[in-house]
Length: 111
Image 1 (cartoon, helix red, strand yellow):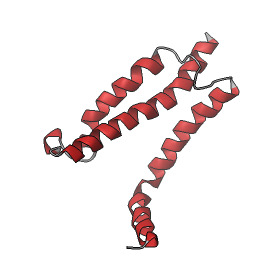
Image 2: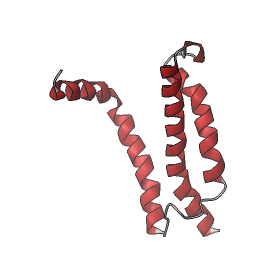
Image 3: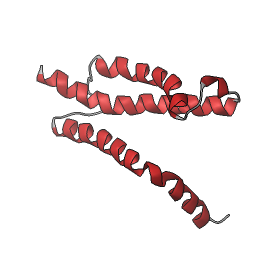
């Protein structure tokens, strides 16, 4: 298969989800930009919300991701399935930290 064929398959696979990808990018960028305008950096103190909620979201994603794909944990049989599930859960936790850390910084800075 050529590179063009691979990219075509990827494009048609992602096409139904473009609205969700765009929404996630906006949800990521808005707190980052607003926080940067108020002096936020990645080394800034975020607060308790940015320390507690991302791990909770990552653990919740372990159970919610199979439901989202209309599956159950019982169908996660092979090590590849488990690595995909764990990787997606860690990704959800990191994304939650990227979104919540500047929000908590701005909230604590106002106090």
